[in-house]
Image (tube, rainbow, N blue to C red; front, side, top):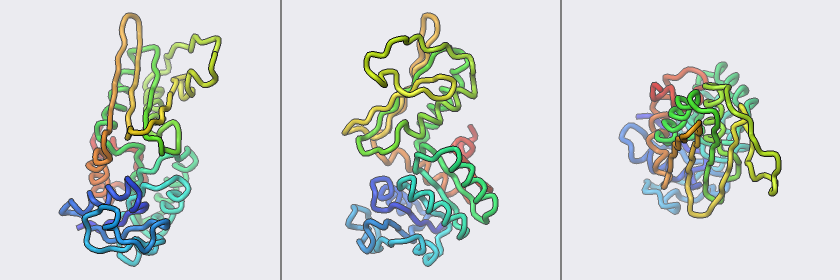
Amino acid sequence: MIRVGVFGAAGRMGATVCQAVLADPRLELVAAVDPLHAGIDLRQFGIAAPSMQIARSADALADADAEVAVDFTVVDAARDNIAWCADHGVHAVVGTTGFGADDIDDFRTRFDASSANAVIAPNFAIGAVLMVRFAELAAPYFETAEVIELHHDQKLDAPSGTALHTVQRMAAASSDWAPDPTTKTVVEGARGGVSEAGIHVHSVRLRGLVAHEEVLLGTAGQSLSIRHDSYDRTSFMPGVVLAVKAVRDRPGLTVGLDPLLDL
C-alpha cells in the first residue's frame, strides 16, 4: 500500500483525486489538506470516504506518514507545497499548471538534493499525452501550425500548460515554420499569442467545458487536425494513479507522463 496525501482536497480536481486514491487497492488516502476548508469532513464534498477531516497545513502529511503527495492547487500554493515535499522527503505528483522555466529549474535542484522524487505534468490525461506526441511527430512535415486550447471558465492561467508543452515539443521537432502573413490586426489579440518558433496559441474560456485542445497543421493542399477532449475530470485519474505508483522509482524530477508511458 502506498500512503497518499492530497493538497487541494476540497477542490474539483483534488476531490476527484481523493476518490481515485480510495478506489485503488494499492493506494491508501491518509491525509487531505485544504486551508480554505480546514476542519470539514471530506464526505461533505461528495467523496465516498471514511470520516476524515480536511487539514489546514502540510504538517498533516507528516503526521500521517504520507509517502506521496498529490497537488492540484494554484501556482503560488503549489510552489510552497512542492518545496515542503522536497524538504520533508515526501514524493510529489503535481498537476498544477502555470509554472515558469525558473520554477522547474528550482524544483529540479530541490529534488536532486532530496530523498524524495517528483513528477510534474501539464496534463494527466493519457489521450492528451498522446496528442502532444502525435503533434511532435507531424511537425516536420508541415510549415504552418496553430494550437487552440479550450477550458472551463474558472481556469486562471492562459495559455494552458498543455498548450505550452505542445508548442515546445513541436518547435523542438522542427524549426522550419512559415512566418505569419498578417499585416493588419483589426481586433487586438485576434491572432492569439506567439510562442516558440512563431506558433500561435489561442485560449478559449467557456462555461460548460472541461479541458480540450486542437492542434492544426497545414501544408500545400492539405491540413491535419489532432484533437483531444476531456469531458470529465475522471479522465485525468489513470495518469495520476500511474504517477503515484511510479514516482518512487523515478529519481529527481520527471516532467510529463511520457517517460512513464515509454513514449
